[in-house]
Image 1: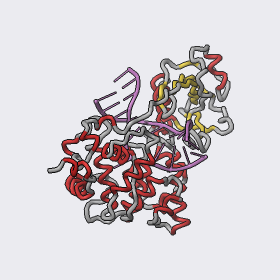
Image 2: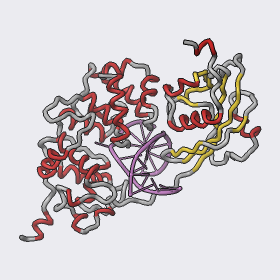
Image 3: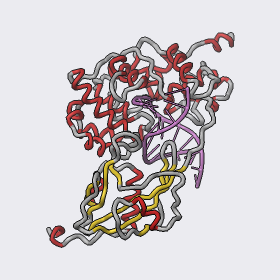
Image 4: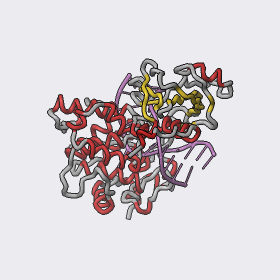
Length: 372
DNA sequence: AACTCGTGGCA
DNA sequence: TTGCCAAGAGT
């Protein structure tokens, strides 16, 4: 056999689809073979899966589906209920856009998701990837679905030398050349399953890959080095102070963060500014300069550390007891200490709560309230 | 075009 | 332990 003929052969969709038919993952949002696809579930899962692992999204998807069975239920819910259910999953603009998108689908499209990619793209939180994915998976439209998995698969198939993220347009163009007209939804999910289970970022299982032969990176025995990547920037570090103010009845002072930006719309304990130049070794009196109210602040032992996508944070916690007569400052409110778990608390503030609970034992429950 | 925007799992 | 990174979007 002429080796050159093999070298030139393009990856066959049929080979991938055959692999997919035997190896497709069973996922909470994925319709079984022959089962009717629900565009709402496809959309909900795609939003949750943006930059998020299948493992992390799974439980959230099931909780959302149980609480909001369809797009109208989600559209009718208060935003804060959506944020509470999303708390811990990260990238909270997704939750805000999820809610806005549900309302747009109800208002613009009568409660049914549009099938056309262009109309999907116009919805809040739906970008090029998600629009293509919904069109392909939910409506079997021949869209070119390019996510991180597909980029990696294509970069290896064609041994693309250009580094990420500059290579994205080229990878998308190459992906378009191998996308078949038939079974677009299955093909999209197949390429993503391949990337997630076989063509993994590290040590891909090429021996099990249906596209082993046409893969140029594999032929060079260099599959691990694709896609090429530019050097990453260092992650800066910031510091700050969180304030744990608790009344004798167990109420804790919390507030909502501004509606946009980092952790937008989520609940927090009051904090000072987060910056590189905050000196956590400063005396308590200095650390308390940004406290929401004057009180006898004491510093709790330890600290909270948390890593965001673009900076690391270290938070010391100052705690104090508030008199029952103290009114919450403007913008803040009292929340029951034992009901904080149900609040829209992002992970970093769950760590603050945990630290406070370790170091500030809950006041003994009132005998009248506890009797039963 | 480059930044912002979370989190937890894993090697 | 530290870094990598996962079905990206908005600005």
